Amino acid sequence: MEQINGKLISWASILEQGTRDQAVTTAKMPFIHPHLALMPDAHLGLGATVGSVIPTLGAIMPAAVGVDIGCGMIAVRTQYTLDQLPEDRRPVREAIERAVPVSAGAANRTISREHTQRRLEELRGLAEQAGFDPSSHAKKWELQLGTLGSGNHFIEITVDEQQRVWLFLHSGSRGVGNRIAQHHIGIARKRCEQWWIQLPHRDLAYLVDGTPEFDAYITQMRWAQHYALLNREEMMDRVERQFAEWVGGDVERQEEINCHHNYTEQERHFGKQVWLSRKGAINAEQGRAGLIPGSMGTASYVVAGLGNPLALNSAPHGAGREYSRTKARQTFTREQLREAMTGIEYRDTDAFIDEIPAAYKDIDQVMADAKELVEIRHTLRQVVNVKGD
Image 1 (cartoon, rainbow, N blue to C red):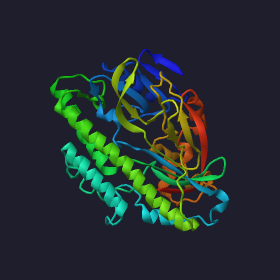
Image 2: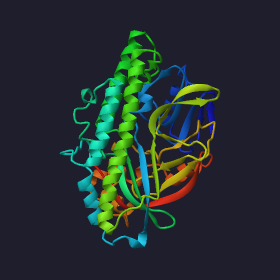
Image 3: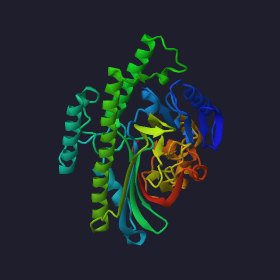
């Protein structure tokens, strides 16, 4: 742990100067209370640093919540062990890719599954209660429920240290969450301009508690967070079905964890009720189960929170990038990716070069930095990886 100044505490041993400077700038905003907590996986983000925990009084910066509202992880521990899996893993990867639309902008062709309809009805009802139409932000939001997206989003079949099989995936609120975020980031910028507020960076524009704009953002953001949660549940149902067909038996969900790492909630810290924005961080209250993925080809972790008050009961959400996507493509090769993915069934394509494990921080170092924040319960290693390009 390092106290960089009175308003910033960092748990990152790997921290490039630009990221540090960005976090310092955000920490100086006048409504931060008591301080910004920087997680071990911190790296540059839009406006605010990815891997930061930002407590605010009377205001919220929409860009500090993030554009993939509610992005997070879900994991299911099955009753199967590694030795019970068929040797040929390509069929299950391809079956998952058929059942779950992957890649940027991907959508379902139709809405035919009963569980999909049930979740959509819930989301329609919540939007009606909230008084807004999600279609005004993204026309195909309904067709994107149960879709993965691209970038660092993934679906995996993994095995823990006891050789037990876990189904594991990472995704968020898809196009509708992104559009909601961008819409309110734009409103925050306009309001700050109208009020002649001088900002250190335009993406630190904020909305003031008690205003109609603030209330609209909170309402729609919470809806998008729930959309992300149900999106992960929907995909997990489909993955489970494909996995069950592959192994030739039903799946018993012996443990299930579903957690956000891009979101805002009201919490009490250091004597005050704050809006706590976790942008690339998970809730790590004492004993709370959480998920911290590495990168494709490296370990992921099932953890329990230690409730560290200085870290605002938070922990990292993954490995965190060391190379930008452009720099990674200029630096690494497809052959190096193949080597990193030895023994793992995945789609062999140039599209994933920017997701090579070497483009990310060393997840083992990140977890070492997080030893005051979480306790590791299980270490998961991939046997099958599904990603979108």
